[in-house]
Image (cartoon, helix red, strand yellow):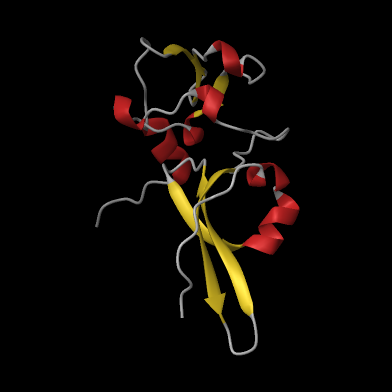
Length: 137
């Protein structure tokens, strides 16, 4: 029966080559990376568990100007524009819903939201009128 590899051993087996964006190996399980100027406030040394090997795919690259992060460096998804509007008829009332495009880190993402609730949270998106469609039943 083969011997089980511990998490620590597995991390020490994962190695990156110095070059391109990897500036140096720091100790046995950390690397110093070259970061773009926009990330100058981020410490450039990372533990190997926070790194993944990847091949660059230019069509999937996201410009740093399009990424919004909060003070704890978490990605913040924000609505970009209102694409469509529909009126949903219920038994005794009607509700207006809007189709919203978000700046998602996974690529273009769309959701349907209640207009009244959304207008309260993001009034700046309502300066332009979004197209409307016929009422849905």
